[in-house]
Image (tube, rainbow, N blue to C red; front, side, top):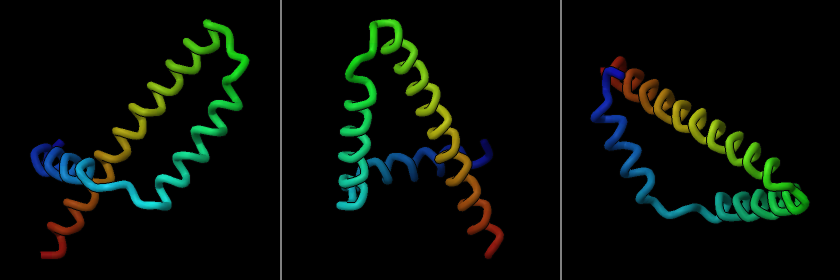
Length: 79
């Protein structure tokens, strides 16, 4: 990644921010749906679900880095 230092700086600053009310509400909704969905999972299903959740988290992290990189490159091109 070309702007690795900038990307890491932005990610650190973003994670220091407080969650918005809208974000908290959506997170609460997701947690309730997840609990309902997984309440009868076996040990093996939990393991599969956990692995799926990890893979989704990794994809989301890549997406965030790409978005930041895109914004940095776009702002640089505006100069």
